[in-house]
Structure formats: structure tokens, C-alpha cells
Length: 532
Image (cartoon, rainbow, N blue to C red; front, side, top):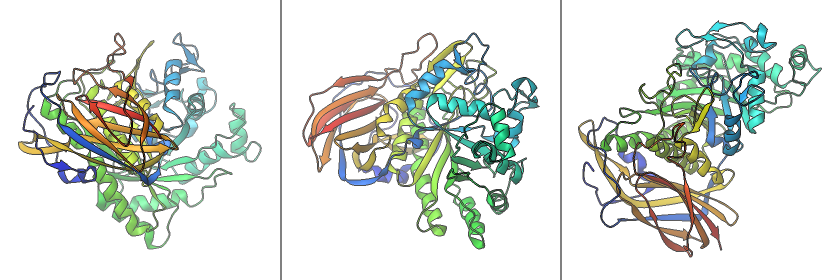
């Protein structure tokens, strides 16, 4: 590897101290590892709860861009591709495995150009518009009813993003009424019934604009706050408690947050339940061609989510001291340059490999550790775009390594996060011509009764590590270990070889209050512990 491994001990909560960005150099490491495995230690504080891990922390994002909706989710009811009411059947079957998550739609930047009435009524009569991207035609074949149907098929909850950039407050309020008003109550409710859905959609989550600092209107924080107030001044829920989400900053821009909330607090505090910063850790070169330093640098960027949550939470507390407003990280993930698309029409599509899977796991563990602060998080995006869980093209479909991480972490859903302390050597590397370092081991833990779930990410590219697990205030009666890894750091699943990167489970003989397990190099591990 490039750069020595330094031996000082670090605690997980100190992640933010060593997070600098840059571009690395070096060569991909050879594997398997050589030499004895160094040691690390993990203390699981069973008696120190943090908060309930909401399934919504594992949520998804589906925007009208490239191949996400058309060819990804929607193939049409007349397609030869197996489908349920026009929705790709293979996708439905896989999304069901993700649990009671939330799916955000229709954007993204597309949301602030989208007028919801274009996507209702007979599909043959819906208008065709220029889309937001490359002036591609938006057919509006997939609209509100189709999206709600997709969510119901998958057992997920909808999150609708409203148009502030080119829409009106009245348009937003009428969309809420159309979705949630009971049949017979209003003309809009009757229109929904006429379009095929007598029962209200019961949409709880509503985003009031998207990236309002950029593609959502290029507002100043103060101007966006004024618009937010107008849009939310009168929005009845029709027996559905509304969870209103304000567009947060680009990354960890504390100034944007503070300026918005200074305006918010000056005379009329509009209702806000969620504050939504976006954070893309971007790339360190190519999706599949990267050096050892770039392998580590990618995780270095991903771990900045820790400081983003801490800084944004602290700033919210200046104006909302009781923290009624929670964080909603409704766009996050990697963003690699073009070159690995399965279909050139799939804008921003990229091949997800083992490196992306570890980014996903590191980020999900971060959310778990802050379960008291983060209400929802939505990876970008569900299918055929950025750090997607699935790739689809025509009748072909495959789950990426990212999907397997989300499926592995499902036992955390609804469990009580407990405090975790990790001691391990750091791994050093070169970024932008200077030394940087990341924790070698990171993770999170949660419990439901006698069931403890411990997830650990081992970032070292070529060597395993032996980890001493210490259960404080408890002991293990049995332990099962599930591992996601591969000999190649850029290993990925394809239509032809769909199971190159998949998790493997083994029953161990580990037990007691203290036990030792080995983590392979470049791996994600879940320990399912049955407590005494």
C-alpha cells in the first residue's frame, strides 16, 4: 500500500478530525494479504441508547433523469418485459427486500420544472414536454398515480418533491389536496377518483422545493425562506399529518443554513419538520479504475458525512433549541465520471463496485450513530443513476453491490441504536500531495430485545484485521457472521455475472462478553448476536 500504517489508536467519534480531500496516486494492491493481522477493539455499550433507527434512513430517490424512470422503473403495461401494471417486476421484487423505506420523487432538479397535472388522467392524452436534461422529451407516462402504485407494490412510503422553481403555492397546495383529500370531499378528490384511485394516497412526506440554492431557483437563503413561507402558509393535510421538508444547503454550508433560519425566526416560523442538506462525496477518478490512494480517498470523502451532521445539527439548535426539526439527507452518494454506462441514454449512470459498497456501508453506519438527529436519508439513485442499487436495460436486470449492503443492514431497521467505541490503527495515504488518514475500522450497533446487530466496515485494501468485540452490560449466546467482500477492489456485478459481489454467511462458535473475529480486507461485515 502507499504510505505507512500508523499505530496510534483512534476512537470512532473523532472521525471529523482527519477528513481532508484530494486526488491520490499509487497502484491497486495485490490480494490476498500477507502477514499477521493487526488488532482492533470494539466496545458495544448496550446500556447507552442513542435513538431508534428509522427504516427511512435507508430510503431511495427516483428522478426523471436518464434511465431511472423510463427503462428503470417504468416499462409500460404492454411491454414484453415482465411487469406489474407497467412497473418492472424484477425491481418490485428486489425493492420489497429493502423494508418499509421511503422513495423520493419526481426529483431532484426535475421537480422544479414538473407540473403535477401533466402526469394525471389517461396516459394517451398526457402532454409531452421537454425534460430537464438534454432537452429529452418527457412523456409523462409515469405520473402521480403510477408512482403511488409503484410504492404500494413495493411496500414503501412516498415522498413527493414540490415545484418551487417554476410552480406556484396554489399548485403545491392543490397537489396535496388531490393526493390526500377523501373521496367526495372536494372537486380535486373527485378528479382523483375519476382517474382510478378512490382511496386517498395519504402522502405524509412533502419536499418544498429542491436545491433552492441552485437548480431549484438559484435563491438566496432569505429569498427561499420567503418562498417557503408562502408555499406552506395554508396546506391542510386532510387527516394526514404532513412532514414538510425544506431544501437545505449544498454540502455542509453552515452559512446557508444560518441565513435561512435567521429569516425563518425573524417574525413567522413556518412549519418545518425536516431540513435537507445534500452531500455527494463525488469521485476520486474513475468508477472502476482507481489507485490504492484513491480507494482510501473515496472513504475519506464519505466520512465527511459525520461532520456535516454534527455541524448542521448544531446550527439548527441555534434557532430550534428543542430540536423539533430533524435532518433529512435526501440526496447522498458517489458521483463518478461517465464511461461505465450500460446504456449511453442513461444519463449519470455508473457501474457500482466494491468501493461504492463500502461507501454505502460507511454512510449508513454514520446515520445509525446519529439516529437521534437524522429522520430520513435517500441515496441517489434507486436504479440506473449514480450510486444505484440496480441496473436495468431492456429485459436485463442486476442488483449492484450497493443493494447487498442495504439488504445486509435491514436488521437495524426499527432497532435501538447503541453507542459504539472503535479503537484501531488508522490507514494513511496521499491526497493532493499531502498525507491524510482514515479509520481502519468503523461501524454501528443496534439492539431489539435479545438481538444485537453489529455492522463493521474494514477499509484496509489488502490486509485483514482481528477485532476484539467487548459487549458492555451483556454477553453473546451465539454469533452469525455475514461478509461482503471480493479479491478485486473494483469487483462488480453485471447482467452476465450477477453474483460476483454477494454476501456470505457463516455460523460461528463465538460467545461470551468478549470475543474475537477476523474482518477480511476491504469488507463489510454484519454480526448477528443473540444475547444471553
